[in-house]
Length: 196
Image (cartoon, rainbow, N blue to C red; front, side, top):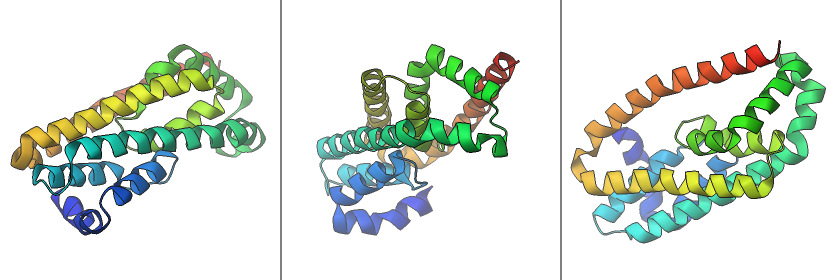
């Protein structure tokens, strides 16, 4: 992780909050960018008083909430229609799509919050919520809560751990994969079970 943080440091040193906002915003509507790495690097710059921790958190929250809303709009306009028209090519049958819809109707708010903490799920969060036609106001409320929790966890954790963050990052990423596996497997199992 330190190599990644070192790699993005020059962009943050030169472009500051603009780089942080651009990467987090773009990652949040579906592109696989190193948003978490940029957030960690920006927070480390705040530890060294090169950026303001309050501004880092504020710009980051704004970027992830707005980016997820763009993803939601994309999903709302194109996602469901695409899944119906082309989903069978990748195993998305009408029965499975209906099962996903029922799952999302039941667990959508929790899914929107928790997805923010996992790579890939984080990038597809808004698109998926829009595709499943989650009401926009409900999405905004839970997405904003998820964004605040995610940004707060990373900025406060990195800010207070400082130099010790390297060891903790390794532990967090290992734990994240251990948590993500059963979570994703449970979701797939519930969707599969409900599609029968």
